[in-house]
Amino acid sequence: MDIVKLVDCVDFSAKKHRNQRRKNAAETPYINHPVGVARILAKEAGVSDLATLQTTVFDLVSLQAAILHDTVEDTDTTFEEIEKQFGKEVRDIVDDVTDDKSLPKMERKRRQIEHAPHCCPKAKLVKLADKLYNLRDLDQEIPQGWTKERAQEYFQWASQVVQGLRGTNKEMEASLDELFAKHGVVVET
Ligand code: NDP
Ligand code: ZN
Figure 1 (cartoon, helix red, strand yellow):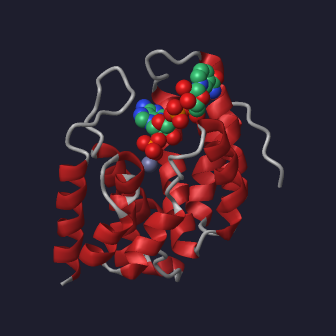
Figure 2: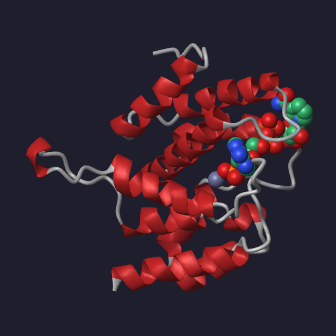
């Protein structure tokens, strides 16, 4: 049953991220982030109003991948573990949104820009929701130890990643564009 599969992902991700915190002053439990990313997909990317005649863009595997998207990058989780427990389609999406941690940080950031247009459509959805969540966090509060300039650079870099994800979901892209405009990021269209 779909709902059981989803709850299983939430349980798995919560256990894997149990000792991690976000970078805000309140040190919010990390699990709030993947759950929030899935919520953006569920509530903001899909269309529940039949009057608009638009179809829902997310599905179970994209929600599962959203919940699991940082487990390999940030915990001891392996892709094999994800495939065994949640199947190959979920694994492939998580793979598409996972940075190679063996590379230097700046190289990883460059590769995200380069790789974004080549992600599968469901991975693009997860990446858009992930960037939207992180930029909303930064819009609310600059992480401890960060300068305003560093947050601004993050907005600039994120806009370049988002550039390669465009044409995937107009609702999330419009929300991202509002944030870019608010933070003075010039977006090429
Ligand atoms: P980081 O990559 O270090 O941090 C941003 C990531 O942290 C986000 O992508 C998000 O990833 C996660 N995150 C956790 N909590 C928050 C939060 N509250 N708000 C937003 N994101 C959050 O940032 P940078 O890209 O700025 O830094 C890249 C590298 O450069 C690092 O090694 C850093 O130490 C170094 N550096 C950069 C400077 C700069 O001016 N840019 C200055 C000094 C050092 P996720 O979705 O995976 O949780
Ligand atoms: Zn994330």
